[in-house]
Length: 163
Image (cartoon, rainbow, N blue to C red; front, side, top):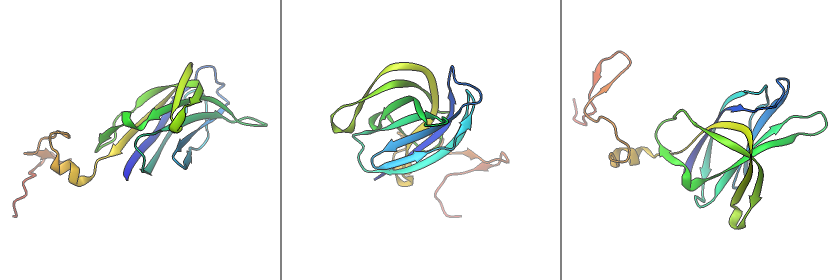
């Protein structure tokens, strides 16, 4: 099993009223996560999800919904294959994803997208790198091993020698 981190950061929805409320639903395997509902064309969620994933051959669906008086409606979706997700030890600035009006299922629970909308969603998505993997595979996760600087600008050695 692998830990998948998803942060729903913010959206940019052209043509949506400032009084409209939108929310995001993430669907992966048998898991469904929903953000709080936020107003406006540029809502900001900054909502984190940490999911334990078994099947890395699939992907996950992200839908943006607009709240309505009688019923809610989807304003766009994006399918993100898990094989495109990076491994990291820290959160980055995220990536803007174009939302699509049509998500067409294929076999094996994969999807094909078509008909892009003018809407975008900023997501940060990465697989957590286990601590042992970070220390064992320095070439995959470069950092300066000889010297780190803490918040007081004091030098901190990463040497494993006992003091």
